[in-house]
Length: 166
Image 1 (cartoon, rainbow, N blue to C red):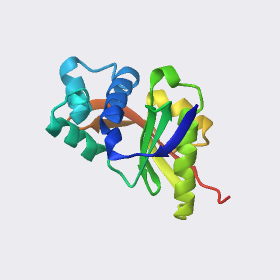
Image 2 (cartoon, rainbow, N blue to C red):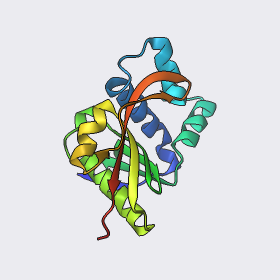
Image 3 (cartoon, helix red, strand yellow):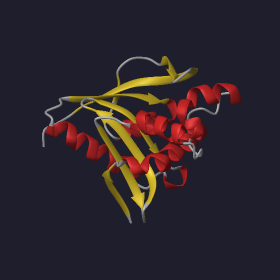
């Protein structure tokens, strides 16, 4: 059974591996190996046992709101955000289309409403645009060139959702 809870620093390596694998497969397939390392930043070292690598990953994960989805104790999804800005959402590929992303976003939007946010913005990767559209997000402009850590070439779609008090 899937549960969503607050992130804890002990989740850092599991979240790091999830981000590295999912980001690479679904968003960064265009990148050469050298560019992939730049685009992943510290997540390139997600499987490393070196304390410095793990600390760098933990620092990057930190955000005002971080939630993880787990299945029998295994991290299968993560959402990072702050008030009015959904920063990142990753769900392990074999768990796609099972409502996990929806659960994470709904938890995040609920927290935003509690902080009296009126809207949420997200820079959606092209792969994620259909998901966010189903969640009620609307495109706000055309596609934009983006970057990730030290790499470039990532294209994103700015989107936003007006939050209804409820």
